[in-house]
Length: 409
Ligand code: FEO
Image 1 (cartoon, rainbow, N blue to C red):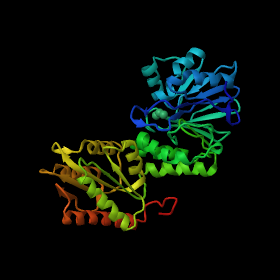
Image 2 (cartoon, protein in one colour):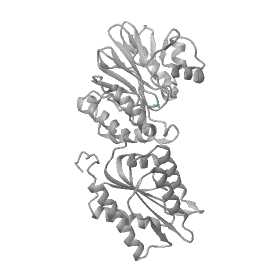
Image 3 (cartoon, protein in one colour):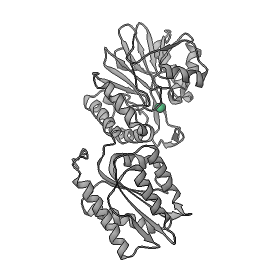
Image 4 (cartoon, rainbow, N blue to C red):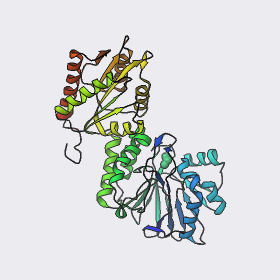
């Protein structure tokens, strides 16, 4: 049984909630689950937009049957081929064998590669249109947001855009599906985490996609994860958030991420943070990399302008969890950060050199000399740590280009 959620005229939600999976892409924690959104337009012709993860095929097909009754699915619009959205495809084809699969040339390649499907494929080009009767679909190719075949589909009459993963969030839809039916507060941070974890590497392609959307009037955003956005202030907020994140713009704040075996390097982190706070930085987030999942560290690093990383030397290298953080930040193409670094060692200080090489490679602005501690913190090292904290605070607080956050900081 299913009481269909009607989003606007002819458009229904047929997505599902996943509260079982622990890790999205087997990488990113899902403490509040995730939804796989699918939508169906019931017009003279029927069009389904994306499917769901294979594990939810039964629930999905049942919802679809409730909305369509005995009518077939005429078109499946494939905005994205990643298996969390294409997983139910072969089961859908078993039920509706005459369905036309609509995608671009890259989609066709993946349909064959993933599912051995080569027939009933309609290949569309950028800005091509398809009429369902009262609803005209227009397709916008948005490659590398975050796969090469990704595209968006716009319904001209209802000003609705099916955006794929763009504007999506982690977190299930607990009752309400549309923003007007729920309290969206939970989803804002999860949208930043989703962006930084999944899409963050592709700031340039996201900017191109946003420019393509710029001339469209948008009254409803239907992403593949999380709430449907319909409230004007929410639509403005999600688009401006994506614009800001994809330009690597930030808020005034500092992330201190460190590794520490016995707490000595951690004491340096504490001294730096306390001094930055004393000088007026209110948004300071500290991550002990042995405990914080990198998913949340990325969320904060994408949010704030300043980053300080500390590590002891371990096996003549960096502390492994810190090395993993550096690898991820490099892979995500993080840009435009104020940077500082510190290290601890017992007899040979390799960590500091490696952190310095990282800062050079990333072209971060290094705000102060690295703080190098041998064995434990003496008065001189403590003062250096405080100076790193105060220098970073001055940089953050004097930067007028940092976007103010909602509190105006
Ligand atoms: Fe939600 Fe890129 O898949």
